[in-house]
Amino acid sequence: MSESVKVERDGAVLVVTLARPEKKNALTGAMYEKLIAAFVAASDDDAVGALVIEGSGGVFCAGNDIGDFIAYAIAPGGASQLPGMRFIYALARFAKPLVAAVDGAAVGIGATLCLHCDLVYASPNARFHMPFVDLGLAPEAGSSLLLPQRFGRARAAEYLMLCEPFDAETARGGGLVNAVVDAAGLRAYALDKARALAAKPRQALLATRRLLRGDEAALIARMDDEAKAFVAALKSPEARAAFMSFMSRAKG
Ligand code: COA
Image 1: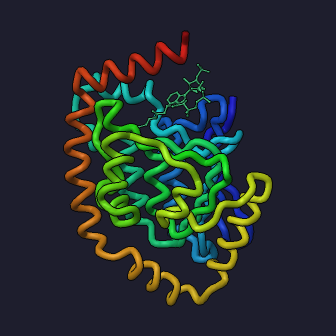
Image 2 (image 1 turned 45 degrees about the vertical axis):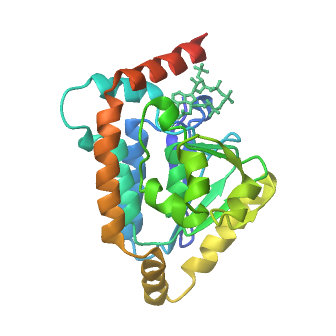
């Protein structure tokens, strides 16, 4: 049984590893809680200058655990309290530099969290996919705003409406990925960049990051809109059918 999320210090960098490879690093409620705790720890610790997030086992992250989606869909009450929802708001409000090292599949939140990272490095095996519509869901984590900012509306429609996946080179061309790096050297490369960020004058770096990210209120407002659509969709029969179909496929 894996640890699910590993958090380690490397000098001034906090390295967060999604460590549930047997389930392609799909995120459970407990994993979201650990990720939120890592953000809080990084925010509260002046010695931490940057955070790296990586996957394991040749996969970045297969998105939200679909079994959890089924459980939430039938649970009464406010889905705004879902750990995944709280995680994306913590991600959007996190003030320190974020670096992603993406090897293999980055699906759902695994892809959309990269839109919040300042630097994203991907292996040639990286494959980004946002199949929200195919699952009967709506976009999340501000992706309906942030994705067209990177790729333009036409290509964002291919990724969010047609749910077409795209590879590392396409992501680099669209400005989502900084560089494509061989899987063997990916972690070291991302860590080097994070160390470089952490060594910069802190206040100047944080101010620059805040300015580059733009209007946080507009982002949060869009996430609020998305959350309403997402939560309504989560409880829909079509979403439930899509989740059940995935889970029975996996077992078959
Ligand atoms: N939730 C729950 N379990 C998941 C999962 C998820 N999001 N993604 C993968 N798994 C599980 C599978 O059920 C399978 O479990 P099993 O071994 O007990 O049957 C295991 O992880 C391996 O997955 P598998 O699909 O066999 O691996 P693959 O290499 O063929 O494909 C992916 C990898 C990531 C492309 C594929 O698993 C996938 O599409 N996952 C779903 C992604 C998704 O739709 N996420 C939600 C987005 S909102």
